Image (cartoon, rainbow, N blue to C red; front, side):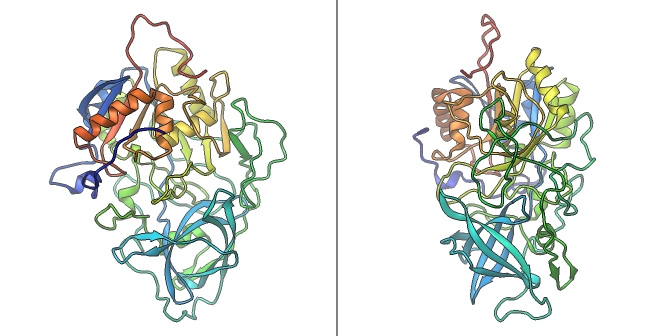
Length: 464
């Protein structure tokens, strides 16, 4: 597939834009705008002038977790990346090795039964691979040993992010109490609804950590949605204790000992607040995204206010991202999502009128398209989705997409092609390279809008 370009190492964004010079805010990134094969260059702060009254931005409210924790296997140090919480209380995790530069490198997964010692007397036991596609991610159970008896060679984790609360002015703490069910808190952005739950389900073999729905049939969109999000579903509390007092859950372990996942192209560790977006909301069960839903990172409260003043609306959804592979591009694993009744109504109303539905990030596309029937109508849904949006599948709801710049091999580019077409994506990426745009989560962004054709009749989007 996809785009035949090579991204030079010097185009990796190594620092958040606000740390690159005095007086800069998050919105001081560049914005590549493509309409078909027509490409234009803008500053991101011009986004309100590129959208119009009645347009709808779909935003992901998932908070980013401090998902990396130092651990030990025997006398060997490892770094555990906590990816996804299963409905039985286990976590999908990735084990990596420190590379001596503050980041990590790939490590062979497994085998089953391997025990990882974590801070505070916590032990992680690998049980089975997440899927048959590989052994990078494993389902793991959490156990407790005596927190007063330190292991030889296993000091308490220190370093940037180890005790970071994850807050800065106006940003959420990112995690809450550990209770069954994935539900949003009562906090809302002004004029923005809150996610809910419901909807038919279908079954996909994902391992014991994922739901085993007893409801027959599939969603109208096909086998996109898996597993009911049932309050009170089996979610055992493993009763973790730490040296600073009781730690009741893995999210609490991450709050006390975790730090944000960092990749080798970044310059240094950052506090968790750098990885939260303006749309982040805490969840009641303390879950969130292992990696930041980064397309929304350039938004500031000031920019949101200007968009609202110009008649642009927002529809919040939630999709908790898992750990991506830094070395090998893989299709996304099943992830938990929720689209509320309020957001479904907002999306359907925009589609029925003259507004354009623009997803902020590939996570927003995945959630909305998972909640859409073959008729293009979005209905409230919550649960697990294994949907991979490809040009063959097409999109049923989304008109446009605001996203970061992805590596040419990334499966996300298939989604971009589904929205814009291969020729348009190829042309825009050539322009991004020519214009020296910056890649990755701290980099510049790309706005894909439909081609303007005043003579074309309104159709049912670009899906078959």
